[in-house]
Length: 62
Length: 154
Image 1 (cartoon, rainbow over the protein chains, first blue to last red):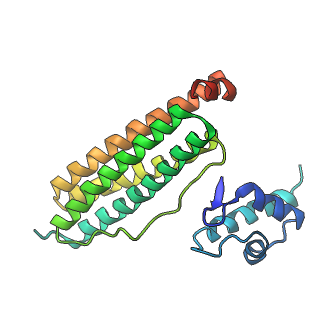
Image 2: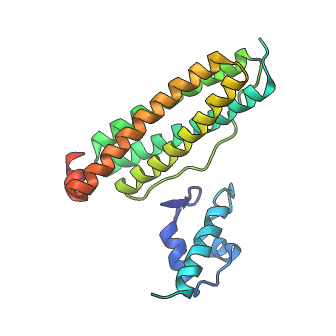
């Protein structure tokens, strides 16, 4: 789904970005790279949640 | 006519959700239209207009209670990337809305604001009807397959 409506950034884009950085990205880094969270800022909490979930998944590989 | 101030705040919270719903359903409708799913477009468009009428009733009620309807506040839009995801997002949104409405109805009952309660009951009925339609679509997707379902919606 679309996480940042202002810049049209999707959850899969964020997940991909996090996995490329081995789950060590911060919200600020993601915002810098994808351009999200810079207009209304309403998506920042959702971005944080996705980073946390992706981080947990990458640290526990199946 | 002035009532307890918390009634206006309750109604304003419901209004925020209605305004969010108008935009979410309208965007989904036009995304569906863009993808060629005319039947899903019509359904989401109708829901958006219904929410607009519900928001209108809320605005009038808040003004009657000498409050100020907050049309500036908007919640987070849940927008899907695919038709199935759009339906899922709408379902999450409607469920949240129904929970909020049930709480608001109880608050109005507590404040003996029976007219607001009646108005919110109508909104709850609309929400439940749409949630039921969304559940039917989920059932159809699960039982007929995504491709068959989407073909039936062209």
